[in-house]
Amino acid sequence: MAATTAARTATPYAYRQCAARARDLADILRARLDGHPHRSELLVFIGHLHTAAEGFETAEPLVMDGVTIPNVTPSEGHLPLLMAVTHAADHPEAGISEAVFAYVTAPVTRRTYRLEPQASGGREDAELRTRIALAEHDLATEGDPTTRYALLATLVQLHGDHLARGGEVAA
Image 1 (cartoon, helix red, strand yellow):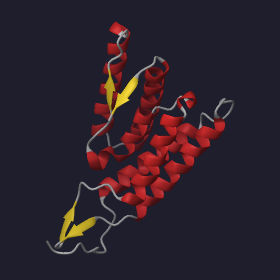
Image 2 (tube, one colour):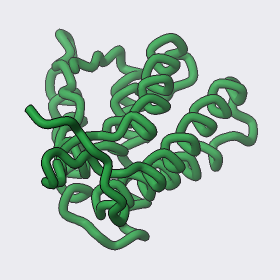
Image 3 (cartoon, one colour):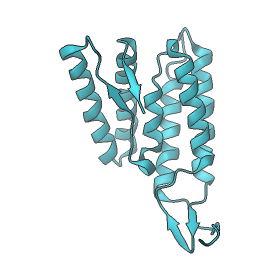
């Protein structure tokens, strides 16, 4: 196998989309700061999201043997998101589900978290998971920045509702 070489190319569109989503998510969380009982936790998330956005904006795509590999999440953007996911798992009282951070990398990975059905959830749980799935679908197909922001805000709220109801996330 030939050595991996970094060729100077423009930031791939998917990386720019990841950066935009990270900044949108940071803005959504920033809007929740006033009066939030876990303000310091939100500030940690916001910091990780800004670092991730900068990482996606400056990351070079992986190039092997002269071929750009498009579906690789760059560590410059991914590692800060992993820190945010870990922080969310360690601080569920902040009300931010670790699942929302997967929406940042979805333009590259085409993956989101799978929500586990709640044992006692019944119809309400099914409706909530359906609303999340519909918003995820719309987010995956929407290119307009205003709509993307609104969908991310909706997903943050829906995942927060799922978390508050005792919902779990499966990777």
